[in-house]
Image (cartoon, rainbow, N blue to C red; front, side):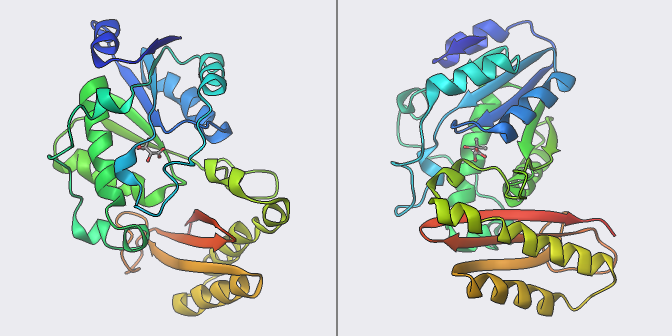
Length: 276
Ligand code: PAF
């Protein structure tokens, strides 16, 4: 695997490559990331990943400074997964001056759910992903469904700005007890880690209820919220939404249940698509 810290070096190495499959990350890689890398091989002649902890997508009171940075370990895992090129710029390379031109996602996509609790987050994500796309120039890009709203925002950005990149959503990888893999799981204490699978268990309960015919969505959301609160969680939202745009359910549109909740000092997100 070649490691590039500059845009010029990456571009020179990719010159003449046919299809490029790209999976961007912020590092601290787990099996969910590695599964993206493995799937990427089916979508390109070369597989490119990136590691960049993007300050723009963190709020002032969020965990930018303490976000785990495990570069050497990450490189080993990416090389083992057959990644051809890793782009790992520092902040000066990606933001040589304050970023004045930004991508502002549609307010219907940006102001709801995660966006309501993390103002500016999706603007930061969309801006860095657009920059990375312009640098890597991939034909396909892979993102985990764990960040469901992020995937929806990126799909819409790519479509509305005619970026011509195939966006591939990859299934969430879970621990044996159901907890969705996330870099932030490392913040959990032992007791919190034992409690954490309750989030996916509640989502699973909602999925099963809807598949069994329940349509009282508000009641299902409320009972899951209560169950979590009773066990010490502080839920931000549990919401049954349309998969395509995360708006309220209507007709037969495919649904997903999305959730965010705090356990101690750690904020976990998760979601499950509902196959009806
Ligand atoms: O999902 C992530 O790790 C980040 O939001 C991304 C897409 C790499 C942009 O910084």
